[in-house]
Length: 273
Image 1 (cartoon, rainbow, N blue to C red):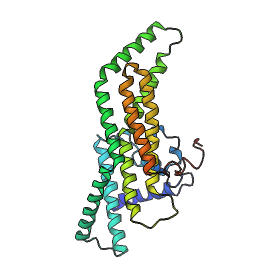
Image 2 (image 1 turned 30 degrees about the horizontal axis):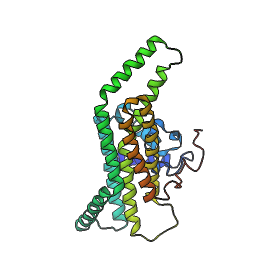
Image 3 (image 1 turned 180 degrees about the vertical axis):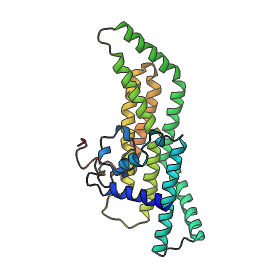
Image 4 (image 1 turned 60 degrees about the vertical axis):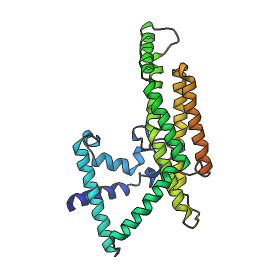
């Protein structure tokens, strides 16, 4: 175990020290590495690529993935214990239980906050729409295949199919992440309320900005869905209205979120070197 832990620590140190990697770029990204223009500047991406070299190791259903993840967890746990001993920090069970009770109380407050609740409402509306729209996707597929066979002038069914696929991927990817990022933002906001004010950018604003980016992209994707399924105009509009209400509520709760500068994404060109 000690040997594996050292190997992982050396791997982390190597990539963190790489001058090409932007410090902290992974803190406020959307974790969609497949569509990220900055993976070559991210130490976490490089660590994962090297630590999980086999494609199957990144599959959540693959036993090897969980074995690797367990190694990381055990190694991290040991480092925490050793660091606590070195700094003479006593991990008292009673203190840990009091801390856990406080965390549970705050987690409950986070879940009941209007922003995460509105995000959950959006997610529920989205689930209901996709469940009812299954026949529509089949009809759309048949229609696009028919257009391709007829080779109608001015029609580009391949492009339409690609746009629909992209729109579906976007709304499905951000569906849960919007709420997760908002819960982190609200949790940070509650924590910051008990701390003295500083001039440093707030983590809550950074998390809120990531959620706003997901909301913005989801609004664009749902607009494309509305074009693809004109008969669903009213139903999709209801979802868009919910997203817009959520967007405005987040901007009201975190007024500085839009101006938060995310390392690597907002403070320099995103073109890959």
